[in-house]
Length: 308
Image (cartoon, rainbow, N blue to C red):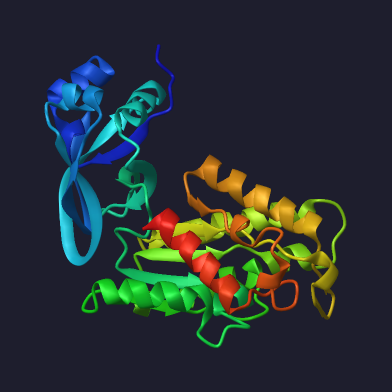
């Protein structure tokens, strides 16, 4: 008896082909019609010989975001082994992420590996670094917004709702009321440097961060938005400012960095490590914590290279 846990995978391309299913899974798999709103498709050229041999095609389809559009496809019902075979079949241009179907059901889908490349409407949430403090030009978020909107002024939008001093507790509480009218397809969250600096003993705060990330993941999925978690930036502990009871330490920031990276990997959520651009470069920090304009520029270049 097969007791493997079933998985719902939304497919709109070659995985619907019975020949591909026979090669990957050893049989046709159960399926039912489904649709995905807020998405369109674009062609993607494939160069992997094994994938081309399996599908018989050197051009597959990938998803892009578009308000009012809808992609017709089907839900495939897969075992653990089937899902692993599907993961191995998909090339590095794709990653598996959760989406919300028009039926309201959540399912896996293979989407663009670079999360900002298909994005149209982006909401940025977080603290003073996401807000752009210490940069009169608005920080990395404003640079990202300028480039994103310039690429498609008609359809692209960026809404920065970051508030200096915010923790992930605050972001979690505030976002549900802010998202509906902005119609986001992508949610970028700067993860929790203030959470790491609050008074605490032991590692219990890390569990709180993970719980907040899980809640934000649910909020994003409710709006069929893709969650992108930005890890913390490097800080110069000797110069880090003190705000009330907040104490910023390198050890806690490093623990936060590892937690966000591991949590995102385990939960198939997009993660961007923002540590390296500022590591051991104190001149790029205005006060040991907040990036200077040049620091924000370095973060912007790093983010753009990894995600678009």
